[in-house]
Length: 551
Image 1 (cartoon, one colour):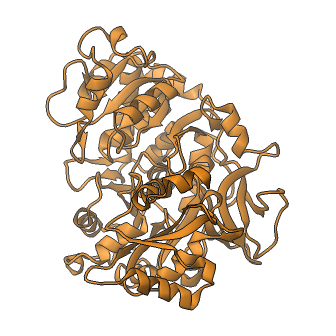
Image 2: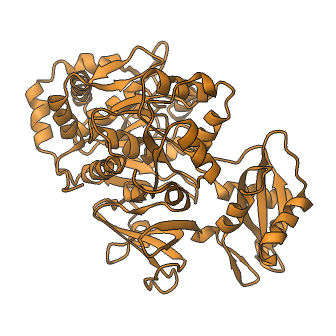
Image 3: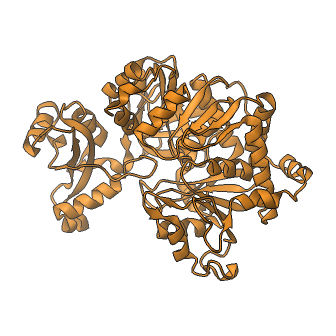
């Protein structure tokens, strides 16, 4: 990345449409939706005018609650063209979480689909808005800003909602010149997106990201993968998360790369999309890659077109990375690390880095992003090999948490450094390794124990498919180590056998006091394991409530 992009997301779409009008922008394999850049830009213009016709103004919040459907992307770009802020809603939310988000974000208009994995979004909204279909001002006094709900789901539009098609119809009366003038009056440093943190560490906060933040971060990410207009990226990671919105969508937009979205992850749907559309790139969390590699129909699909992509979200076992390179042809796959508050990427490997570096590190600093490791207690900058908190500073740092000034000050210090809460080290060549979270660190009888160290060893145990190490309360030591393990299919392992393996290779205080064999871990919709939920379960499962109170 030689210089910064200083225009808006909407303007970038227009520039790509002008330069590559007839190249494909968005292609779906499971529905009749295939658009060139010119067609896609024109469609976004029509919907943008529809939002204007429905009273949306600059600075208003438009929330989108849907999987990776075409209307999601159109809403993003249409909102960006009129200065509205897109509020992304986690697809796994239920009524309490949705009400909190709509209220905290001051959402004016909600775009939603019908249902997700058996959960009816329509019924949830009806619970929230008991006056739906009557007078809007009586919908819900707790949601004073919410004016309208646009239905982008299957089947007939529910009473009281606006059908998606009406946006384009009503926008036809808005002159193109009005849309152009609004676009010309926008600034790249204005907020374009509010991402609510996944909740792996507590209550969600609205991260305010600007056009400048996400466009330039997307540009840097695409550069690391050597993206061009010849590439085709299969996108199955959720759009509502930075992985989907920035690492995928913005990386594609800034390089005119074709997007091949899959609305919901399934190994077969993804493998079919990659094979049929000759995708050159794929983004996913390790579990997605594992599910495809282990699928009985894997050999029926053609992965010869694949070249690169991103694996992120959680550490990747070396065997999985090697299989992705050897069996999926992703010889230039990259690793990215970051956080929503940093738009999100702060470090990344490149296509030139060795496989060893792509497995054992999260790469070096992104261009124009400063990074360092500090002592969490003193703030002193640490040297190579020393464990401390990862901090970053640069163009990609969020504007702050929406209506949460104190929370913002807690993570961005007076010198502009964003504190990640992650423990890391850096080597002499500037490659970073993430060793865990500060809050995940287990303190047992005064000994600092980093769960990731024990997890890395347990990944080498042949019977172990996945593992999470957590701290649980102890009256005697303050905390004890617990290993939660998912075994490979057909494998058996006892609690004592697993403890013995650890004891043979690691210090005594790192041997788990407790072991639980589980079928799966609690996860966010974006694929992040929720350790705090695992810990809550463990405390109840082990009957440690009294120890919790005294720990």
